[in-house]
Image 1 (cartoon, rainbow, N blue to C red):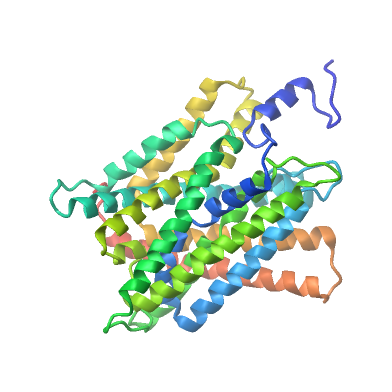
Image 2 (tube, rainbow, N blue to C red):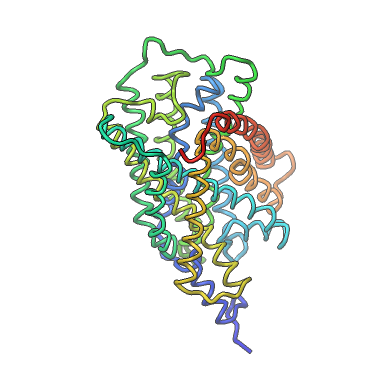
Length: 439
């Protein structure tokens, strides 16, 4: 009979846990939390926010942006606090916290499908974004003097990087990639709003909702809500990032994690608000789904911004893929009894990268994907699931301030969950009706 450690694990179980990507390293500093969170949050979504504004209009658009920032900062704080709410135990994964709150089986079914939907859909969208930005870089640099290549080829080029990077074992090993990605997000966001400001407001710019028919305006508004929900999606990797920070009774991980998260959210505001409001001010309802496509001059700056986007989404892809790799490898070694090995990791992760590449090539409906997944999967895990857990665990006084705040967040989150996908689904149907596969 094997000896068990303080946590009730045998030596073999301990070795398996230490091999899995989320548990294998706990040496991160608070600033790791800052740039991992920036990389997780400021992704493809920021470039679509001026487009979301053109569907929402000035008043609702500003309100939704600011409310989302406040609500998601609050729910992020809740998750950081709940990471070690049981003395001597750490909830290193979102589903572990869910299992503690809702029960072993129910917690798994509530959290895992939603978390997987977010992370896998993001990885697919990042494949499309990376390919689109590479194509835009190529087209701007060539200026019509090169052979025109299909978007599919650029997505394949982008994917080839991930077949290599996906072999990095854990969160700490991708910290350099994540730091580069965080710097890039700040850089291309600044280029996006700086170039818009420099261009100024055109003479023919108007701020009417971009759709002309009543159904178009309604569905567009719903799609805009989904786009904003998509932009605030970093919560799905918060506990996994916190798991990499060391923790002692004197210095619990939540202190370092919250410090990093707060810095990250200030950077998020610096990226999001100027891009959204300046971009919409400059182009109005004529802005494209990706603001860098709307901006065509100066050419060298737009080419540079697109390359920054490529580097950023390389990092973002890895940050969101790591918890998926952890789930896949957990199932393989704990349920299916495969021996932990480099070969197992190579095959499992390469198959996943190939899958996201294939789906990205097949369905590159960028704008529709954003708002559809934004409402469907991102709203629960980011806007209201942490609030439900908080109410269930801490049981704040009924009709007290904490009780009211949590219920307001839940109501707003549920509305996003219901309304966001409707607009996104319509956009996907409209795009699909004119789309030819593998162009």
